[in-house]
Length: 102
Image (cartoon, rainbow, N blue to C red; front, top):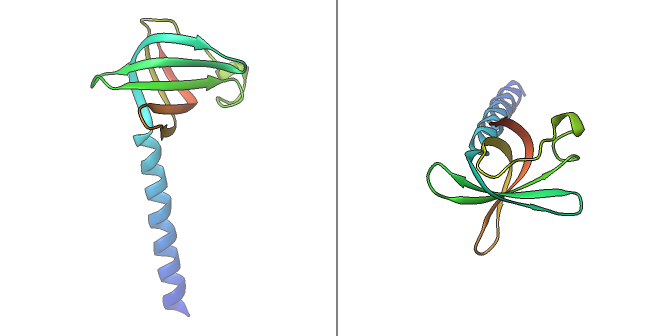
């Protein structure tokens, strides 16, 4: 039984560190090229430092309230984290946290 507990704890620890590392990979930085407003927020077209285009969807609900929400301006340098996803031709991120916006 003790071997089972130790194995379980090691597996749980590995899972926690793997998930923590994934959050770092979901950070993007770049320049806002366009902003399109929608019903509950907006989508910012961000060109990353390695010339990829990512469409960032921002809403008050997804960033945790109005105190964490900001409307980006074209030409602004931004850094965000969130949930990455893809369509057939586009890369997207549902923004959960705005790290910087200058």
